[in-house]
Image (cartoon, rainbow, N blue to C red; front, side, top):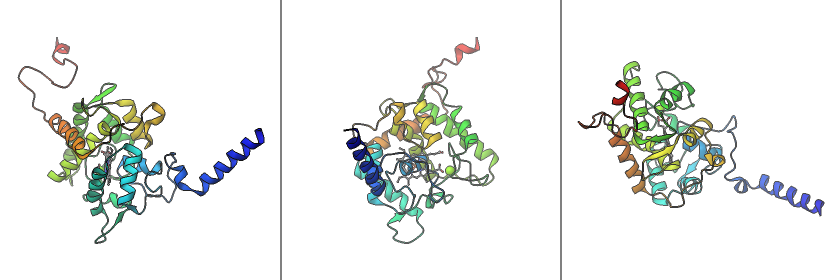
Length: 261
Ligand code: HEM
Ligand code: MG
């Protein structure tokens, strides 16, 4: 009986090795020849094999199936994201992009990222622990609010504008950026409250891995374009530095005034 089990197991392993589809979902660190880029989620989905592990030839069907399998995104949303991404491939009428294409500065990649340095200072696509720690400093509680995410975005922009003579951040960049800042809430958090668990977000950024081993699973209800717009709007509202007259810091659960007496 034991030997039958062993045969079954060995056969299963053999099949998995031959058929890459059976390995979909399993996390593997990228190899030396695999392309990775400035998007922690594209990198993550490639590390899990939900999109091509080598980061090459990423087609519309790849994005649709990958975002569904990894995050339960609806097809129209995934298809829209592909349309927005395809400009990264410089070839006319391209039908695919690579994760390396995403690295071109000021095409989709932009200054003041949360976890990468500006192209002016160094690699605009490799995870940068120093930069990331600066952003993370604004996630001051175990539950990250929209305002904390907005604070980290604003801080990165002020730092870039102050010290990067080539700093560029257009209205289009702002729209992309709001989506990116909303992304952790969309993937791992509560979209109605506009909040997300800090441990899950941290695990994701640092490991470029879905935080399944921390108990996270993809949303049961599929995510659509309307969800992205809603959470982006929550972030946008939270980027205003203007407060109301009565509340010193709405959205921040601590009473800053109390600390001054
Ligand atoms: C950043 C592309 C989907 C999360 C970026 C950047 C690019 C990009 C080019 C770099 C912008 C910068 O300079 O910071 C794409 C493409 C996607 C996609 C082509 C799909 C077709 C997603 C999804 C999520 C996500 C589904 C999560 C739900 C993020 C985050 C950042 C980012 C959090 C900001 C990283 C930082 O500021 O350090 N993405 N992305 N992306 N993306 Fe994606
Ligand atoms: Mg960037």
